[in-house]
Amino acid sequence: MREQDPTGNNKPLIVFAGRSNVGKSSTIRVLTGKKVRVGKRPGSTRWEQMIDLDPVTIVDIPGFGFMSGQSKTTIEETKNHIIESLESWSSRILLSVFIVDISLFRVLFERWSSRGEIPVDVEFYSFLCEISPRVIVLANKVDKVKKRHIDDELDFLKFQLREAVSDREPTIILSAALKKQGMRELKDLIDEILDEEGLDRPQWAFT
Ligand SMILES: Nc1nc2c(ncn2[C@@H]2O[C@H](COP(=O)(O)OP(=O)(O)OP(=O)(O)O)[C@@H](O)[C@H]2O)c(=O)[nH]1
Ligand SMILES: [Mg+2]
Picture 1 (cartoon, rainbow, N blue to C red):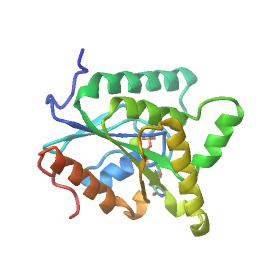
Picture 2: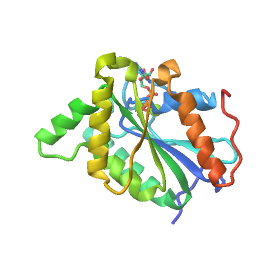
Picture 3: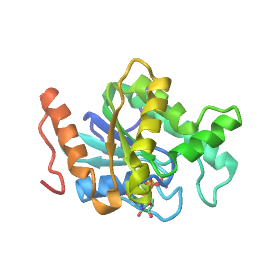
C-alpha cells in the first residue's frame, strides 16, 4: 500500500535522511530556499516534510537516534515510522541524500562497535542502499573538523561504508551546510542525475 503523500502527487522523491541534528533541514534550506525547520536540539523535525519543487518532491525525514526531550518509546516509534515510510515510497525514490556529521562519525562508530552493535549510521546507510537506486553521502559539519584531520576522517567514513555495502562505491561530498560549503557540488550532482532521468531541473535557491 502506498503511503499517503500530503502533497497529493506522485512525483519522484529525493529523500534527505540521517541521524538527528546532522544538518538535513539546513541543507534543504540552502538548496531550496524553503523555510524548513532547523533546530539547535536533535529531534526538531518530528515528521517528514514534503517540499514540492517540480519535477521532484524533496522529503525532509526526521532524524533517527537521540531526540532531545523524547522518551525511548517515541524515539523507537519515530525510527519505525521512518523505515515504514521509506519502504512504502521505495518505488518513487530517485535518490537518497544520506547526511552524516563527519565530526562525530568516528567517535559514534567506535562507541557502537565496542558495545558489539552495528553503528546506526552504517545500518541506515545499508538500508538506504537497499531501497534507493542512488545514494549520495554528505559528510556535513566539516567546519568542526581540524583541517589536518579531514582526510583521515573522510577515509575512515569511506572505508566503513565500503565494508557495509561492498557492491557500491560510495559517493561522498564534504560539506558545511551552515557555511554553504559543498552545496553547489551537491546541487550539480542532483542536476546530473535528473538529466540522466530525462527530468527537468528544479528551481534551486542559487545558481
Ligand atoms: N557547525 C555546523 N553546524 C551545522 C552545520 N549544518 C547544520 N548545523 C547546525 O546543526 C543543528 C541541526 O541542524 P538541522 O538542519 O536542524 O539538523 P537536522 O538533521 O534537520 O536535525 P533533526 O531534524 O533534529 O533530525 C543546527 O543548529 C544547525 O545550525 C554545519 O555544516 N556546521
Ligand atoms: Mg530536521
